[in-house]
Image 1 (tube, helix red, strand yellow):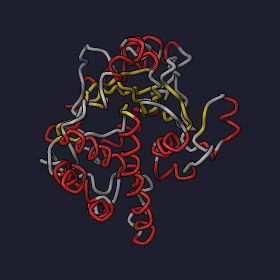
Image 2: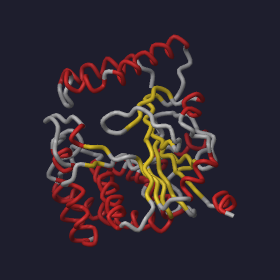
Image 3: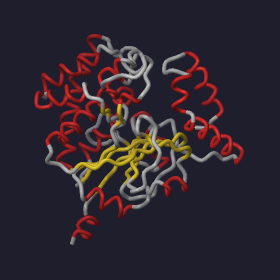
Image 4: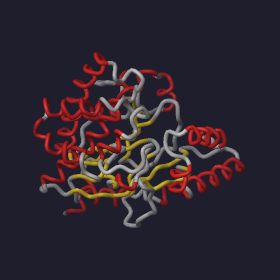
Length: 331
């Protein structure tokens, strides 16, 4: 009976795809590729025969500030499912029992998204995915210990300090207190979880998950209610003037808060799985370029931890090396 229920359960994991970056499609009916910010390039979408986030009730025009949350909003308002999920064109959850080597951010670093790596991480194993999802209320990526994640100011003791230490790289650090105050004002039921999560050591980012419909709707109400209000505040105070993706980062922080809130409730089955990051999302045409890329990927991932010490985040020498790296790698 359980077998039949799992097979009949309607599961949709929406894959947020960029307009300007091509990516290999994963041929698994659970995945639903959706162009993020589709309102800006309708003709290109028609050529690719893909869904866009600009139909029905949508916020597609907010792509530059809300990032993949425009796809999440579109799914919330326009799609029907028993389980809703989200992943990115270069980030996928792996449902395999095998544990892969991950970096400090608890991401499994992989070079190219191609047929080999799609199989390697079980992205085509629909039946396995259905069983794991159907047996749980929520499936999320593993949380990372911020004490092990380098920042421009060194290692930090809490999630809040971790983000503040990146001040000027992702968003104006004055926005974080605004987020906390806005949650307190609009969603006081999450107030304690917000403070505990931000002052804790376990960070859960990237906004990749699968969850039951009721919980997905609850998370969306929480995130977008706060984000729309915060958007109005930022328009007045100008804190996001030089940081266009501020609201996207705030939504990511709220994702971590919501999952923490669910965990503290203690009444939901929550399973953590690994998150895989694919550096390159299409296979290069040239065999030589493939070999060059694979070597560069290997070197980058192999010496990543050492690289943070030699090339601190935000440093000029790190940016200089990054520019050379991306000039050699075909993305």
